Length: 233
Image (cartoon, rainbow, N blue to C red):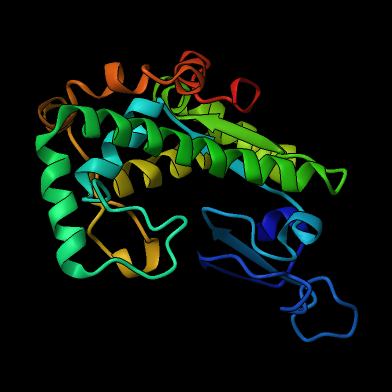
């Protein structure tokens, strides 16, 4: 980001704040020439209109939903429409029933899929309402097969100079850093905010029926067929 903006310093982390409120790009502010790179799962106030560049990433919806299951974000009693929060006893009873009931499991898979679809749609919609767009949307399988190309496209979208994003040594270094994070996600997790990395064996054991369950919802099935692209959402 510093290479892209000509800034003097950079801060990064999880959770995006309005750059204007941080003084970034604000004439006279001590932070005017700083850059911020942040990761988030939703568009917070001020981001759609003030963020210079917004990048997205996506992967096979089955993998995304499976990851949520493996991270225990699964079979949680939904609170929508309730006047008061369910008790711990009620939540536990629902979760136990959910894990045993195939029909509830299928509904859970479809709801999780639609949750992710809504998250993606809200980000694209908020950005486009400002007359702007997402600069680049990386499909994980494309990164797996051509990481150098994807790093170059990300650099180009960020506004980094061509000399940098076409430099073989620099691109190789960035790819190597990504590989290091993937292979050792627990190191410096407080800084990297990395999730755990799941193996194919773990996914197959926990999620073998998931794709079929997700396809039981027409909208989710269409999104899956489109490789989770915004145009298929």
